[in-house]
Length: 605
Ligand SMILES: Nc1ncnc2c1ncn2[C@@H]1O[C@H](COP(=O)(O)OP(=O)(O)OP(=O)(O)O)[C@@H](O)[C@H]1O
Ligand SMILES: [Mg+2]
Image (tube, rainbow, N blue to C red; front, side):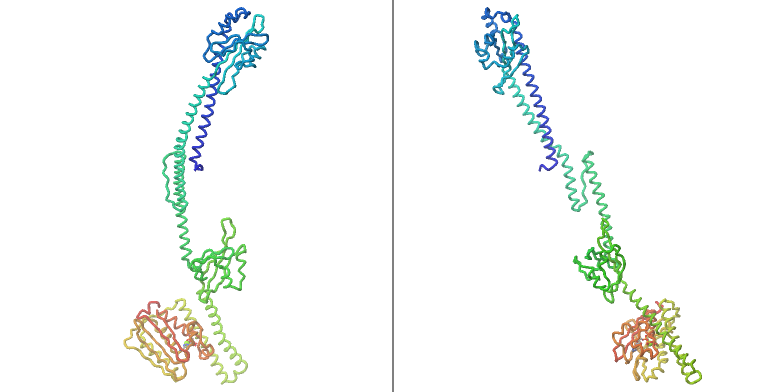
């Protein structure tokens, strides 16, 4: 309770007033006392001066007129509180000769024998000291008595006697005690008023401060809608005004900060890349949803050792230095699975003292890019290989001819036939690649026309019949009546059918059967080519449409295949807005299904 400013102010006021009243009171009482005493002494001096002029007192011979002297002295008027004694020298010792009315009867006693007469004063007076000496009785502090002794000299200059006056200061003491009581009462009243006034005054100071304190406490709890009433223009009013403007500023700053925070949070949560922050020990600080999914980190997980997870993914690289190295910046390839290949960019982050406090890692999905890059590399390797083989053959045959076979006409013709075949093969590869490339860059400038499947398949049947017959295969064709035509490029669509049907013939043993079936399924135009040939292993089915992909490279090449037929077919079908699928069972046969959307094939061409 006494820790509060309010009570401290009250106590300070109280002490100040107490001290002031005490000092003033003591001063006043002291002045009053000395004034009273001075007044009493003056009265006593006045008495002594007046009594001295008595003729009997002035006469040198006190023995003769002793009775007159005693009478006139005792009858001389004196204040009620005062007592006076006339002492005559008895040798060297003064003896009481007379006393005023009401005084103690000390007549005949030596000065030293009385209690009333102060010996020291008498002694000084006898030594001829002319100055008056005043001494107060000190028997009891409240029973103070003023003393005055005046020596009386004879004509010859000898001391003939003394006038000794005492005055009881009881009245003075009573006045002083009454004054003291009044002062104490006044002091008590002043102090009570001080406490009341001080309490009111300090309340007027502390109440606004308390109001600000309560509001500030609410602000500390996060409630920034706090306003203090400004009731005055003084320092407290200014404090209230400053508080209000502080809350406004804080509110503004906090809303800006939270806006920035939520923007960052949204960015952090919704960014396409994974993001992780780890401390200098490699422990998880933050992770966005993508990063959590990648590392399979639970939402609640706090102590996850991300560095160890990274190290598991890349055991070939020493990653400890990332936590200590001054400039830990760079990138790292991480393969979470064959379908999840990421590039991690990392950089350190610092705390507000500029010290390193951890590492930020951003994980970028490069699976597609990686696959494309791998395909590109494979493709270049394949093209080189495919072209190198015929070139090697051509070169070796040419060298053989040049080495003398030229003279042997039959052999030369045979060899030149091989060279011609290889040239044709190269031409075919280059033509196919050019076609694929122009389709990749969508540079095909196809003439569009109505293509009816009936017509198209009959033409393919006509063209492929000879090959089928050569292998003693049965090529059957079944076309549903009233099939709609589609808009597309006749030559390209014919090439699709030829590629698919030629595959069926090529990869089906002698005497096999190839069925071509055109029909409507839902709103799609379908062409299905089924054979009962060698079939394709399941593991190869996914890659069958890749460029240069062949199930059995050697066999396929021996049959003149380059592995481009199906990828060209797929590209053409897709450019016509359709799709191509292949199903196969090894040793049982293969089904190729081509699906066109009815009548809209032209849209994408
Ligand atoms: N009907 C099928 N039966 C069995 N295997 C097939 C069939 N169709 C395609 N294949 C397999 O798919 C591979 C790829 O076929 P694709 O037509 O792309 O190339 P290719 O026939 O080898 O050469 P190209 O067609 O360029 O002359 C073939 O090498 C073959 O192994
Ligand atoms: Mg083929």
